[in-house]
Image 1 (cartoon, helix red, strand yellow):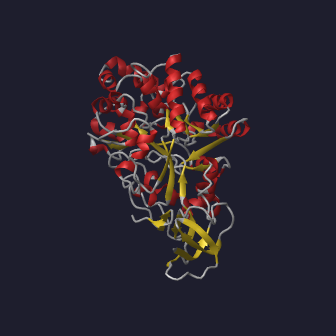
Image 2 (cartoon, helix red, strand yellow):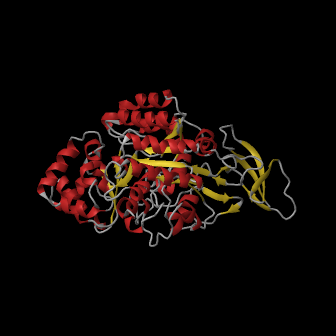
Image 3 (cartoon, helix red, strand yellow):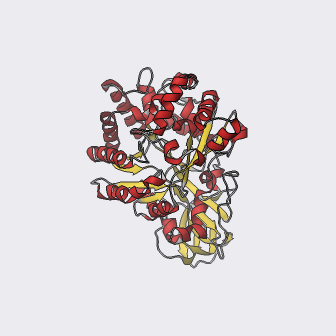
Length: 501
């Protein structure tokens, strides 16, 4: 038995904090109140500490990280004990044709793994030996890679869609909680509306969640959201809009219309958000869709051709129906987090790199992408602090990290998203309370996911518990040191077992 004494309990419901003791036995919370420690019970003194439920990450990418580090230190040390993986249409199962494992985007987002020795969700799950709870979405891209003959960067035939439906149904029967689509990325961006609706209907039959990184988060965000909302309404499926944001300073005025679309839908809609005004993704995503449709080898070769560069430059400066981050953010606001074969450019902006190379920024980018055969990742400043605050305070939102573990660097959100929210400066900036923020990170998400065994400090629930110091908790990471360990997280338990990190 373990008893947590003298802590200030924030129970995950949004209710005001109160001084309570918590008795834990057999991995469960068995009693809450003023409790005298039973004989032989281990006592944890939580005086002047906040005690709350383990945080639930609605949007992560730990599909391979949990195999590389079963203790999931990067997440657990910030208080996260449950995660939804397989997001943005990017995942690692099923694998029916091992020779067709998509290494490019998969490696950029999920990192390296030497042996994909599973073929479906059941066998993937059997390969995991971790106390961390990783719930999974079936990724759309892996359905397409397995179902579509030849290059998957095209519309699927009726028979190919039927194969996707069958594979999705099997994954959902095995325990996947829904489907993720990454319509911003190849090959998902080439799906027809018929494909989207048919797959969404399979999810609806299982009462699952359709989580979507929609096509455009910038100038065309309204039409992009209308597309996925109409798909959800036709399929009658619960919709999760992934990492809601409005990209580009010129587009921040669109936020009220974004909220209106989400609020007025006939379907249940939620969204997740990471607590930073800059994002992180694959450097190749800067390229126009016509180039992303090529294989990696073809794309690298084509980027060496003057006529392709001219075409790409024109498309990136004048995008039509897709998000050009170059156009929306500018080279000054796009920074390298990892170029595997060009480590000297880490943390530098694309404009700075171009100056160092004595080149036009477009040519510098094309040179790097044509030469890089390994991991290539970037961060980009996407929105204003006020937009971040409005999204954070919206009642449809919940917590997500969008954490990516690849290479030797990354975005601070991967190691510090939860303490970033808990620190006083952020709570003040968001004009909110610790109780409200923790509800958004625990009970609210548990309800959305239909988890009845966690998300709250209540008798009979799993003892997934975080103890932190409200005065010292902080995100100390920077873009140059994104992996810096968070401050102030004193203890984390998963099913009553203290985790050591």
